[in-house]
Length: 161
Image (cartoon, rainbow, N blue to C red; front, side, top):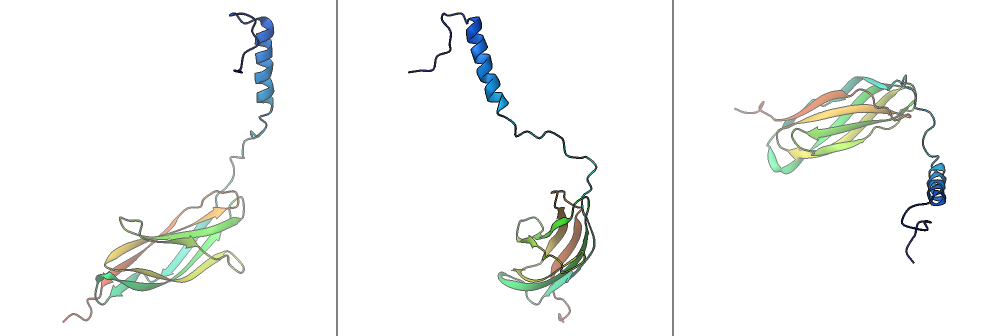
């Protein structure tokens, strides 16, 4: 049987309107998931500083689009907490003009606030420029500033006669 409103005629009665209003009111009264207070506006985001990394340049003996080169990346960065502790420090190493590269999370430091990464990346053996981005995310989900670096893959011209 289809749902029918509690009206006795084509015109709604006072009792019918009252019953529908009560039903809507009861449905809305169950919605208590809305936050009761706004988050504070004076929260501070974490900050990253003192990015150091190597290499900044990779020399290719013979560029070959069908080959790869292994790039050992050593990275250090300091992440200072904001209003909340630093939850994680993440990085991306992406080729110019494409999404080719790598992303990841730096391991938590054993002590202090200096994060270190030593990793090997396999990249195409063609001249290109990769942008390194490193930033922190606080426990309150605020993102820090972004520290930038570049790694250039270039042909080795030192042995050319």
